[in-house]
Image (tube, rainbow, N blue to C red; front, side, top):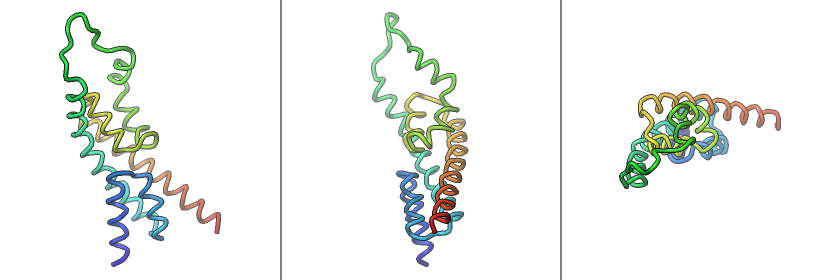
Length: 142
């Protein structure tokens, strides 16, 4: 029963911050495979919620109308439109965390389904990598 509660704690923390949930799982002496699964699922739930909140953030930030005399965006905007989903989906989880990556994807108006698919791939990949490195590192220290 304590293992289920510990996994739920890792899941709940991963909704907010994935990279704090993995060390918590090791601290609670959970097996790396179910811990990584719980952390990845929690991070995906957090990212899904954040991508919908990001649309509201975009409307809040860009509330003014753009006139003919205003530029529609610069180089960064063009880059994000072109490469945004890939960069945010695959590198965002490790660089800024999955929740902030999803919030950014929603805020700049990237397609939700495609962004969530790439975020899921990035979350799973980086969770497995970080969990494996931590497990092997702890084994080497013992």
